[in-house]
Image (cartoon, rainbow, N blue to C red; front, side, top):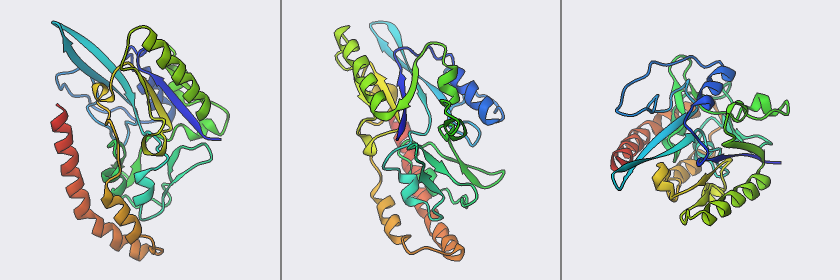
Length: 261
């Protein structure tokens, strides 16, 4: 049965215990931080940074509201990374999480350009794409993801997806009773359903989430084109053909990020 993570951002204190737990469990080395005018660090996903807490600041009546949000791979049901991968290295497990098989990954970066949430990164150390695995090694041992265990304020819950949806709806209803008219559950239907859902007190845009995440039509075109790909030689040719598209997609992502600032 598909599992899911539910993140109640209204309880998040941005302590970043989840970031630390992710690093610790997955043995991911630390990276040099940067001052970017915010408490948020690091400023983007990296091959060795799979979880980030986003600090969204919103001014209102002379005061500042903090809208925190833990972000990682969303483990989409309709996963663009899986669709576009020319090496068929990306797939869904029985738990519903999206997993990259490094034995098959050729480091072409197609998944990086295709992801609507701009999550995966190619590690130059071994030329493999890396991202959150939903702690698959823990799931197979009946343990929740490390970040869920580490959260000190119970902002993270984990379990069967249908149960998480029900819990999320209860939390949203309670928020609306308290006056949060824009409260909503994000991730139930987006991209076929996300393996990581959010209880939001305001619109997705307030937390820097796309209101209606979509997969670029280019991904579907590549999926059709790469359908017959079976050998390493043709995979290499296909990966080379993807390079120009990836450059264009990277420029699109940069423009989208600048537009949000």
